[in-house]
Amino acid sequence: MAAPLAERHCVVCKPGTPTLPREAVDTMLGQLSDWAVIDAGDHLELTKTIRFKGFMPGVDLVDAIAPIAEAEGHHPDLHLSYGSLKVDLWTHAAQGLTENDFILAAKIDRITPS
Amino acid sequence: MAAPLAERHCVVCKPGTPTLPREAVDTMLGQLSDWAVIDAGDHLELTKTIRFKGFMPGVDLVDAIAPIAEAEGHHPDLHLSYGSLKVDLWTHAAQGLTENDFILAAKIDRITPS
View 1 (cartoon, rainbow over the protein chains, first blue to last red):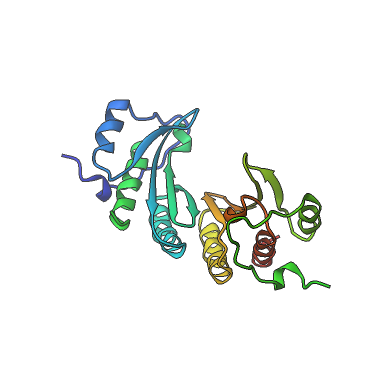
View 2 (cartoon, helix red, strand yellow):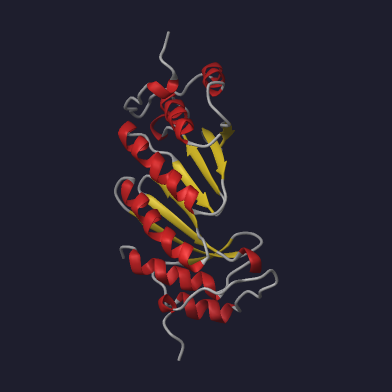
């Protein structure tokens, strides 16, 4: 049995890496907290919005997510506003969702308030 | 003569605060570095995209901008991606641009690489 997503590590994606089949996407989405899959036009993305009071809790989240992204060599788009942080994940080299996105999402779940 | 934008401070905006006339917007825009005024649909925004290598320089910028925003009580939207940070400024209470946006932009210019 595969290890939980949050305990696995991203692998290097090269151009042409295949995206996950929809069934795999749905299965892995079920292992995450409050993420959604959205159609961003030419690719699917994983997205989650975390809400809080003020601005600094969002800065703290950026600071907490950054070393995880660096360690995995896989980086989200982070949209910080007063009161919310929106995290978007997709794999550019695959033009869509790969296991890397779900692994990083699961690791982000571990450090974000539920 | 008014102090340079970067040396002034944001004032509290209440709902109904008027937006700046276009002439004032253009004059103050001329005092900033690499900002643009864009029409975001129902309001104007000031926007600037800062580019860098990797991800952590953008995290460092978020960390540097945050205390300035907190001190001024005026907060930008920060869109951090691998290689770039997009900063958007507008005044929600005025539904558009006020002097506060230009003051914060000038302070951000002081700490960002040109």
